[in-house]
Image 1 (cartoon, rainbow, N blue to C red):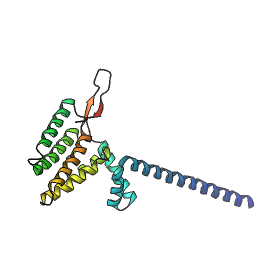
Image 2: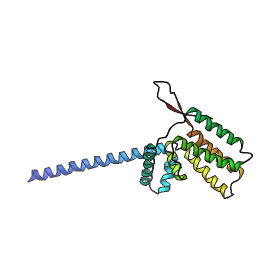
Image 3: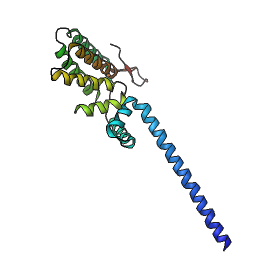
Image 4: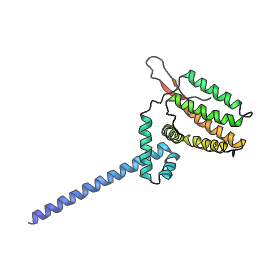
Length: 197
């Protein structure tokens, strides 16, 4: 009888150790995953946690964004297209003094056109911002700030300095999105690089 009791305790102890190891591994995995999401999304991680009210819901949302964007065909621009967009931006900027409100709307439109050309879906603003946050988490805040000023402008509440700041915010996003395909010699796979305009 003693041997059966001893064997039962050994089995229960072994199960307890296995459960503790599994729990520790799961906790380690979750912490590593959380750390990876924080690193990848930067400030967007904290904003999403605040928006969803819980870390696990926010992390589920960020993983869903990543999966959605990974399924998109995001392409770098050909050099000629990048040059066309850069020229359009320079022309837009040169009109700011004469028409700041119009330039703000044009900047928004040019960013949308660039996103579309790269392969980002151009749905509602929150969807666009969420998609951009996957590959460009540090500049998505510029997009959000520009949109807030744009909304104030529509209500007639934004002054010229705010409009200038909005265009600067759009410019930061524009520069980040303006990637071109380079290195297309035979045998060399195409790679992407940001264009400095």
